[in-house]
Image 1 (cartoon, rainbow, N blue to C red):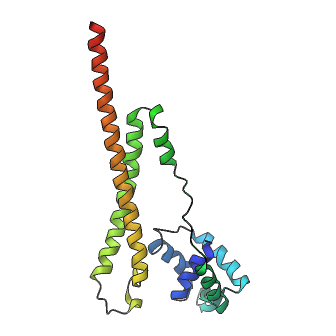
Image 2 (image 1 turned 60 degrees about the horizontal axis):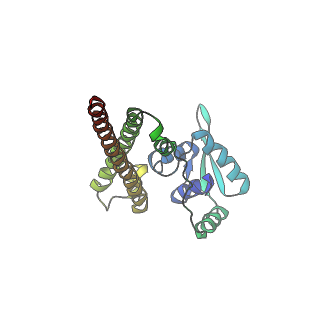
Length: 202
């Protein structure tokens, strides 16, 4: 999957400026795709050359002209072509798992602090996503989608939000599992140390 496909998916919902696409990435798809504003503008330039998106120039007083990008028929065809391809799981490159793998070679407290720190990050993201979910669930379902916050337009976007929620919940559960394991190992170590001290006296 390329960045262009995510942009096409956003443009398929409604025309957007590069800035607006960045906001939608930040507020709507951040739980499964990350891109900086610079990357988005660079990709839009490529997509324009490829005929996948077409800019509408909006003059602004005292400001540079604004470009509102529309998905083209070629862009819709590319999105459909990509959609027809089977999706594959994203390869995992997770440094925390490598640290856990090496956990037997470092002090338990070092690993505990690392896991606690990561758990806190996932708690913060989960709180953010749950707030978005609550906002979506409290909005009248008959309300025009254009009136909803950008990050929560449509039920399909809500499904992606639910995946983000479950992703963060799973991470928190796993961190708790690791922390419980580390506590057990620490207790075992203390017990073994006591036995060694007792045996040494005899």
